[in-house]
Image (cartoon, rainbow over all chains, first blue to last red; front, side, top):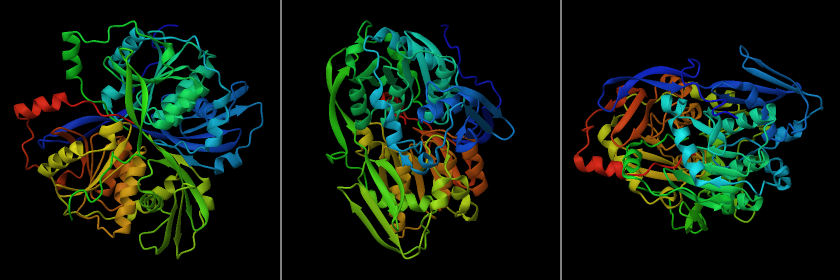
Length: 291
Length: 291
């Protein structure tokens, strides 16, 4: 597959807007901020949720959300996905009849970002997934991917306050999705994989968001054996990763990282030390926006 | 009020745990990660939500959550708050009868982190709040506060992957709360203010999280006229801040910042340029973990 089949388009005028303010000296400044809009999702006529999104991939977001919430199954026949831009509504229809009245009632707000789902549901498929044991993460790939994602044009670089997720194969970035919500970015990738029947076994998943329980659960349910983040871990995220045999790499910045699960898949084939030039460049980089 | 009435305690063994992994050279490392635990909240016998939290202030979290979700009113008489550590349950009781069956059904996942609330509810009080026009934010205070919060012992410095919020008065940090969820940290402060009858008009609120619509709405509903973050903005967050006349300062790092609303409260009394020493120190600081 070629690199960056999908990537963010910071030039898309719907995604950012310029606002005027003042800086620390009191001088007027014009700055770009990310635009979010509501998207209401219906499944077979039932209203499921309204979420805020930058709105660039409503269909993938809808599919991925439903998959990751276990409302849509991998073997479902999706008969329609209709996005209505005026109403900010996306409707998904399947052959299978669905009714999530009970599921929609029970809400659990999980750490960091809440997707409002009961743990029981999130864990449904988790324990049944067998991740590919022979998948590999070469540190040379990791460094290449981090470099490519950090230098790709993005809404983050243009306007900030946004999360990104990358689906990769070896050292090749395939799909790079951004959104105001890190879970949206994850779900968009899940939706894309479902729509395009992309197998997960040999893929690497990178996120800017923290490695919490939900992030680990989603990655495992998507069948991806390797998860990398520039951010840190929660204890439960680590525990779940170990339970599922997921390779979990966090605090990945520059050439440094910590792996707290699935270390057996890592091949240390790259030089983990900086050249003088790399060190100087790394120091100049600014700190990334947070959630 | 004295400084740091409440601050994080990274020495509390319940809040972090040490796990073993490998670093980028393949060498074994022991690292601390943040521990999250579930907390189920009941209001007058009705189950409201289960949230993940580091668990250091369950009563404040419960009160603040209910207040910020408009399930508890500022004038309510709270007759009991009971935390059961074994069951991970906190029960809040009020004189006033409550029933949120309908409210609990309708969920909107807002940008970034979802608190699963309908926008109608979040906006209920928003339009009624009049923020203190004569509140002031001196840039000297801002710089002092950033320095104090960045150097205070914290779970962030100890284990990462956590968000923090600070309630301040002038250049004095009053309450510094952390949690895996940035909304939990905000809610804990709201709960503390309610419990201790702390007036909001002369306070400054600082968060590590992004300045999204919900962050702005919560701050306005708490009656605090000044909101600062090291992170960026979303367009709707800016729009809501301007609508409410909130002073909104983002991308506050080192001495730099951008104010996109309520600039009239800002007094530029500090030198916004770096001394040589400050510049060197700032370059050495690492990038902060994200959500």
